[in-house]
Image 1 (cartoon, rainbow, N blue to C red):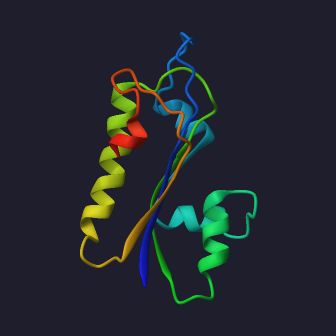
Image 2 (image 1 turned 120 degrees about the horizontal axis):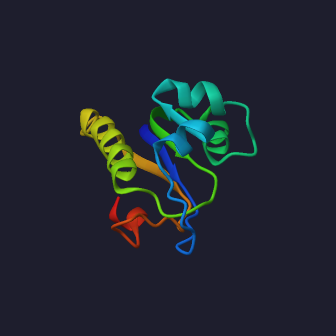
Amino acid sequence: MRVAVGSVWHESNTFSPIKTDLKCFEEYELLLDNHIIDYHRGRRNTEIGGILEITENRHIEIIATVSASAIPSGPVTTVTFKFLEQNLLERIQKIRGQIDGVLLVLHGAMVTEDLDDPEGYL
């Protein structure tokens, strides 16, 4: 079994005037491809770390895509969300038909300048 794994994680506060841009993700966590596995393997306090631990001996191959997290703050800028969306979807599209599923770690409280439910949109 092959499963694509990714994360787009942010808790937005719509009352905050401080927008969350790409730099916010870069400063906290913005990882691509196998850098995700290298960073999260052995970290039991992260969702992706837990996924890696559980799948390790179960004949499940993980294909890492994008892992992006930023400290809670204001809405994510449209440009930033489009960057994250494009990178995630491009990677999944490349392996479409070669995977059995997609597992995304989402916070559920992200808001962008244009979308009230960007995680639902993904």
